[in-house]
Length: 213
Length: 258
Image 1 (spheres, each protein chain N blue to C red):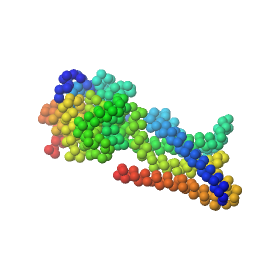
Image 2 (cartoon, rainbow over the protein chains, first blue to last red):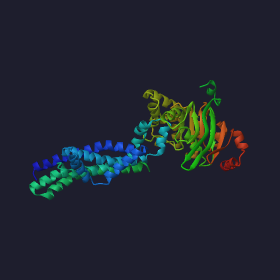
Image 3 (cartoon, rainbow over the protein chains, first blue to last red):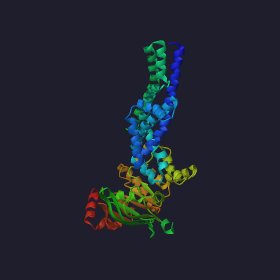
Image 4 (cartoon, rainbow over the protein chains, first blue to last red):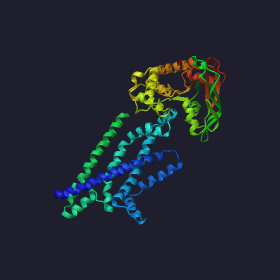
């Protein structure tokens, strides 16, 4: 494998990172909205978001990407692969992060909300200043775990023709006929992205375990 | 505030809290039954009774941490309904201290005291900090202002919680078993803080089994059982001549160790 091929893989890597970042950032915004609706106490919102989470957790990511890419095209909405997978990953991440953060919000002791209410703080201040800062701490290990899954999951975007790291590997492999070498390198690149995050996640987990002992 | 109320220990005739025929249900279980209670401005009430008798539920209805289903609660001039506006108006008048302190663990002591004045009263940072420091001084814990709650003892945390509630300038303070979660050696510092507050004319309703405190500061002691008010009397009468068998039995049980 020459320098040219390796640089091509790095271009793929760049798109993997970009897609992960978009999925995670937009998914965080969506996930926060879902978590808040899911814990709002408003029956209709809780049902709606509960259904959304069930749908996206109960179907394969691959199918979700297909539906967004081909389904929307059937409906007359032709999106570029880049936009389609971004939407797909955002919807997917919103569901998972929404569920993780719902659990974290509910894990904040009830007394915190009660104290905030007794101090006449409204919903916005109760959430922003009291509940969410604590919920985010609680959720960090699981959130990072999901981010790792998301990064690896971006390889599925290759299926709709989006050239991220896995598809770049496939292309290079077809050119130089050294699949083991190429996918070995691709694997190492994924590993270098995910492993530090995993380490950081378990580090945080240990730290919180000590803090709450 | 009338001139009266400024004088230490002087309850006025002005009704501050009125509960009329209040009922509270948890599904099919009646937690409060026909509660009629008037608390005058400046009055100190001690609420006691066996666990599950509804005393915590009663005070939690006053600031709408629990909704009630029947009757009426008035605080100041406001009728407490289920609408946000009346709840907010009532909570402006009412401060609360909890058994487990419920300080915000991710904020320093000072930040705990500044948050609500800045958010709910829209005070500026400087003003909120001055108020907070003043009240932390009053509960004699100002030197811990920059620590986090977890770095303080239980007694210190509860005094911070009292200061935090006072920062909202309430007319009434509710205490929900404020010393029950404390180690014995820390009970006194919290009670002393409450006694000082009572001496300043604060209207107080305290759910507590600290009968020494009741004797010293209460204008009236109220005994509850099974969601009802069984007996109410000034502490002298309450401890020496309880009228009801339930009250005598309860007093026998909690006063036995002495």
